[in-house]
Length: 404
Image (cartoon, rainbow, N blue to C red; front, side):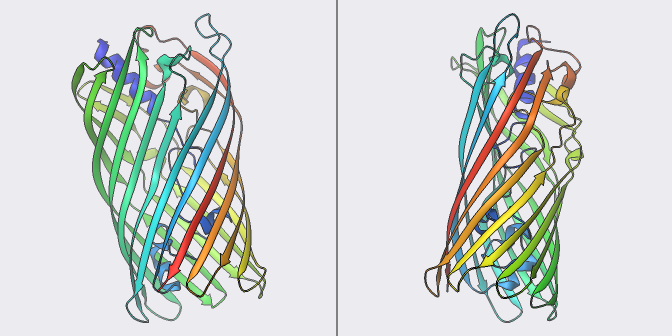
């Protein structure tokens, strides 16, 4: 294996299971700060903001004309115990903070049709170790951000049935660094490109207080292009990273019990088996063995007054990574529990403020990985990492809605 192939293999393995703290794999759901308060239960069919376009576009028919701007701040902390890595102590702490913004607007053409547009982040990851970390050959910094620019429409076919359709252009960026050749050299990959996909949705309203919805979002083929470097500034080559962002199916339900309390539930199935390989052309390919995964959540809204609504929710997010031998150090992914609280305040007939908070708990998990588990042949000089991770994360979000 030549030196360039070693660098590419390190980069691929470093990016494959990093995450930003919000969702398993590298999938995000942080498009609605009202939804954040109920652990995103009922996404797309609750109808209390303008984010349905990103979850289930059929739910756009629940609202009128308006817009929203929001942002979620995500902080993840991990205590990493790796007391014997190649005869050295590679124990460390990992702290990552990222901001995930969103913008949505929609316009009600008539009693039947609503059109809209949105910008949000459906996939993302970030990890940052100290550059002097003893196991830096397993990765130092990695980030992936996919921004969707989406247009769509919701159509009320009957009083009970609504359909929705959306199309998106996805701008994906990848940046990552690691050491190579026993730490004697550092390398960098800086890549970006576009892909395109669609989303369809259906919503059925049994009555004014009860509704259900299902949506499907297509997979996209990511061919992210750019250049790879040794950090001294020497250009290695033009590079293309190829992988699939998986399709997923999302279910949502909402039921208003009475004038004070409403319940919601949601589930998402993501086809991570699409993620069969990460390829950097022309030098390397890393096979993956990820599994399909579910995310489920339930939530409640309490209408304290005409102006103030309080929320709470709980969710479970299943990791697609099946075992410790297929995890990497650039954060090892695992199942997670989500507990959330939130509130909305209607400041006027046109303006509403939403805030949400989520605590994520990941049970202690391990990494036992030397890339041979992924690639068949370990890069020379890359030791097996045996590490234990204790990880928690926090999400705090705020948004403003304005109707017109």
